Length: 192
Image 1: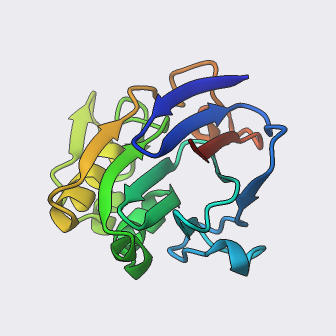
Image 2 (image 1 turned 135 degrees about the vertical axis):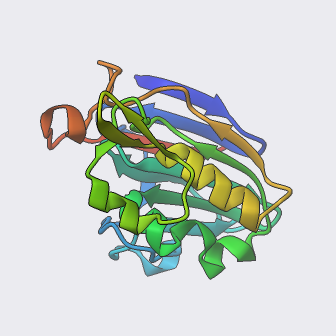
């Protein structure tokens, strides 16, 4: 049973707390910026790009606090695992993303700035970002807002949606930050 569902223009986004029993394409995620296509699977990457004509089965991205990002475009879809490292290194603006001519993007359940406490030297990864805040002498970072800004600055016409669910706060989701779990949330994009 899914614990989160969002409808997009060309399909739906679902988050499951266990491996779903449907066929899907997935990559071996490595916290990088590589984006694969279904014909190159299996491989190490942090995203999958497929044209609408070649879209055969669901796409899957696993997370435990990182951002699952689905980007629908005129020519296809890109589904990404965007942790802070991938975000810093530009996974959202890779050439594969440009190829689909992005129109709509959804950032699924992930850790929010209420829980994403970082060390002061973390600012070096995003030196120009306005998305840091301080509470009780602790530094926090808003990963969703940073991702949203990067997508909107690169693709000004993209329609954005962000899940209100923080995986660290919400007991129905797996969170590495909360309890170092090895379990993962299975995020699916299903053409529909």
